[in-house]
Length: 295
Image (cartoon, helix red, strand yellow):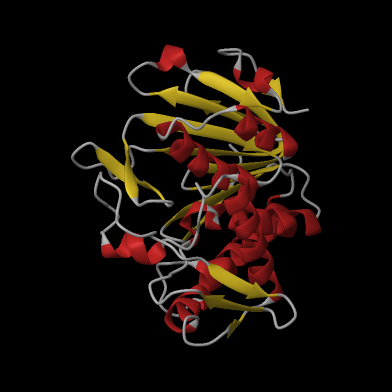
């Protein structure tokens, strides 16, 4: 059995499996990757009051908050994703989620849950547009941490490894077989993320909201996304759950997925045979048990 190394961060368990014949080298490389994840947690986690993002949440409405280059680049990516997903992915709804205990009402809320944030590239700062704005990177933070951990493994000379955060976000270095429902995918230097509207469900409503109006999504839908980047895979799997619930999985959204080289599978818990596959490489999900490789 291949050695496994793990750490608890961002409210979940991250695990690294290194396929290397030298156990000492594998352990050293994995420990370096886990250190990157812990450093990411210290900056981005919503579960830590001392995180950089927590400081921004306390101060960024009153004054600009200086960011490190890596966090600034991540927030720039989040703004692009917000535009690409028609606002279905938005990291600035943290205050709204906290106010509603992660269980917002089924009806739309008067006023937008988020007013967004502004980034100043010259000063490398973030500032909030409203007092109620709060950043919550839960929809992309794990993917970002996996990205950094994979960089550490590559720097250590590792060519084959499997990393995951809470099993819902997976990144493969080299080729690995990963099951998604009835499908068994062969991920090769690619990421997989699975989001569901049923997580932490209560009274028919789950933990995901449409950030554009605050409406909770009905339960019963799962969206899986395969992409080169674990950040893209995680953000898009969340956004697609929102867009599916609102009937917005149209040609323009498929074109946006193709543009970033991503492929998605949307499935209903009640009717798994009605699964829909779309995006750059739909053949990834079309065979029930064959191992398929991302081109």
